[in-house]
Every structure is written in C-alpha cells, then in structure tokens.
Length: 273
Image 1 (cartoon, rainbow, N blue to C red):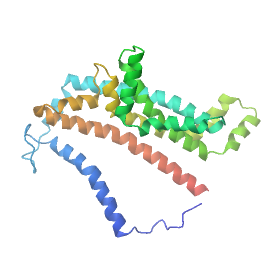
Image 2: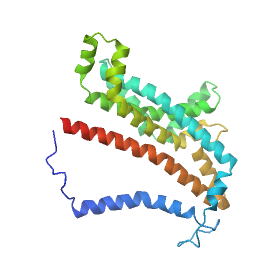
Image 3: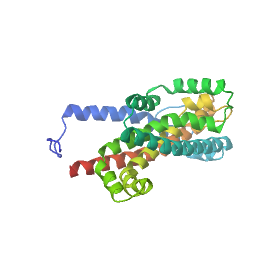
Image 4: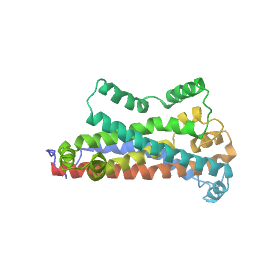
C-alpha cells in the first residue's frame, strides 16, 4: 500500500533545520579529524591551520605496529562476519519457519547483545572464558565480535523472510525440489541482498569495535585499541588522526552500500504491492 504523501512534497522549514542540525552534529567532528591530519604542527592544534602537509600519511604507512593492528582488525572482522552470516541466517530461518515453545524468547536473546553495552558483553565473555581456562587469542576476539555481528545478520534476514511469500517454498517442494535445491534456487535469490547488506554491516561493526576487543584480545592489538593507545602520546596525534580517518573510510563504504541495497529493495517491493 502506497503512502498518501506526494513523493515530491517539500518538508517544512523546521524539519529541514532539524535534519541539517543532526547532520552537522554527526559529521563536523569527523571533518575536524580530517583537517588535523593536514596540520604541519605535531603538538599544537589551532584553527585555521598554520599550513597544509600530507607527510603524516607517509609516516603512518611506515609504522609496522599500525600494519599489524590493521591486518588483525581485517582478519577478525572477516572471520566474525563469516560466522555471523552462517549463524544469523540459520537462526532467522529457524525462527521464521518453525513454531516452538519459547520462540519469542529465543528471538529476544538473539537480539539482546546489540542492546547491551559492549563493555558488559566484554566482561561477561572474559569471565566465561576465564572460568573454563580458555586462553585469550585471535579466536576469543572473533567470538566477542561475532556475538553482536550475528544480531545484524539475523535482523536483516528475518525481515526479508517475513516479506517473502511462503507459497514459493511450498511450490518448490511440491515440484520435487529437495531442501538444498529449494534453498539454492528459491530462498537464496530472495535473501541475497539482505545477506550481502547484513554481511557488510557486520564487517563494519566488527572492524571498529573496541570494547569487546579490549576484554578478549589478550596481548594482541586491533586497530581501535592501537588508536586509543596512541592518544597518550601527543607527538603521535597527527598519525592517530590519519588512522582514524582510514577507519572512518573503511567503515563508511560497507555501511553506505548496505543502506543502498536495503533501501533499494524496500522501494522496489513497495512499488510492487
């Protein structure tokens, strides 16, 4: 059912000002970080800038500890995303297709990690792993990140399942397709964009997560932890700003494309109803 409001109708002045204020509030600090990556002064931050230089980008590229942290963050985010895609899809399919006692409670528990502060999840995981004498390593970071990445994938896939027509799956089974064939030729094409969007969001969230990493990383350092460790070193502040800009850019593109995918799919489905 289409909305009664005209697509070309103009928003009120108050709505426009509110949207502009929210946009500036969220993005001006990011712009300031980018500007200070260009300052030639490594200890004093003034505006306007005393000059413009790109030397800090070269300094950042030469930092071996930065590269180790970057590679570790990408590895953790990739593995956590893969785990989230599998578990989140299976959980969404189970909740959508099956009726069992406590289904709503299971759904609530699956979503709960994204609502809890990261520090709470980190402390809980550290206590649980410590109880079983599980050594802190790369895999404990993955476990910590996967707990909230699963939520993102689960929500995306479950929402897509609810917009699917169950008759398609029934028709596939009636025509002799087995479960694997039905999933490959019917279910997967319908959830592909939601799966891709959920994976990109999960990667972006995992890549810049810091609280859970702090409590599960042991001696390893991911990129957010590296950034925080550099804040106590004033002379390294320009390099830290460069790295923060890199993190923003890396997380921006997955979120941007995920939003485009989900918005485009919603618009298309809304027009066909």
